[in-house]
Length: 129
Image (cartoon, rainbow, N blue to C red; front, side, top):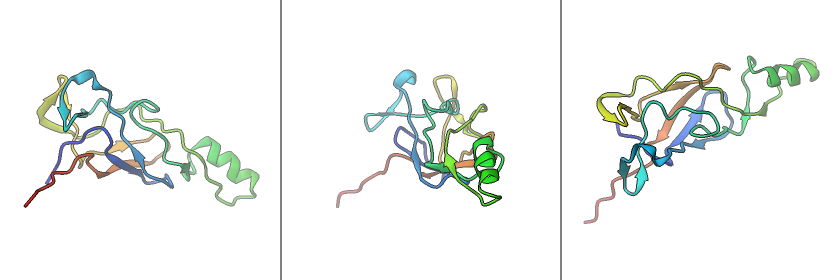
């Protein structure tokens, strides 16, 4: 079942070596458990999308150069995400800041070929017996 995503959601990139956390600025003024909720426009590199450790995408120019310098041995380089398009598909029936809300089934594509997906939505419901 899709869950809405908020600040602190854990993400992974198919070419990254480490997880990262989503950063959501409080500009939309919609909160879940005191943290901002996300919409599909929360895709800006180094604002919303932080690095995933090292990048292993052969299409990334820094990885390609390092791999060439290492005689063809894949050489990961620091990740700098490049995500020019919004998350897809989002939750089109739920609007946050006049844009579809972001849910944990949405994906984001990096220009280097990586696919960014959510591991956790950033909020959990705790039931107390």
